[in-house]
Image (cartoon, rainbow, N blue to C red; front, side, top):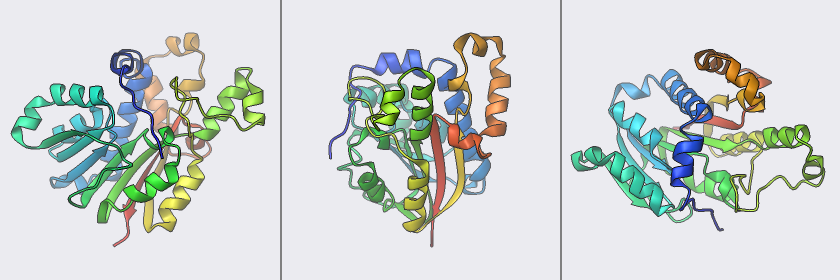
Length: 254
């Protein structure tokens, strides 16, 4: 299996993606969902693996919440960025930072939580990688996996004049841009989790309508109102199935 590294794109990710409304919505929705559904878990310090952790936003939130985090990413530049912005946590011994791939990482322990956000869609064989990750969680622990939604990608292509990509089942990117090479069907991800001994606690769409809204129209809205509507819709069918990403919080059976 091969994977895509985002070396050379750190500034673009930080400024254009995570620095804008879409990135803020994504992070707010993610942290809300974890805090809402896993509040009882979070009462005690947890040991969490942030796999493919990118710019370290989830690691930062987890550390602020009082947990210990092991972080890794395949991009050397992402690793350097995270180690720099969270250097105090590294020095305090509550954060480890290393370069690595989900395809080769071998954990030294089982984790209370494993967080894997927007990683699988950049692999040629995401199902194989997910199967590996499912073994990293202790019995009773939680796997948080967020995937790029194939259905939303198809809908956007149909709306934007590229019907042929949907008709010919050519939705994946070529690895040179920011369209993932392996967008996933959320129902298949859920089935793999449940067949592998996990119980899904929550399935939520991340940005169910904001990405379909014309930028001019989106600019008319107050960002707080957009976030409130996204919160209201994210776990409701059919809206959850239209999210740009779909998050699963799943507990490993004891």
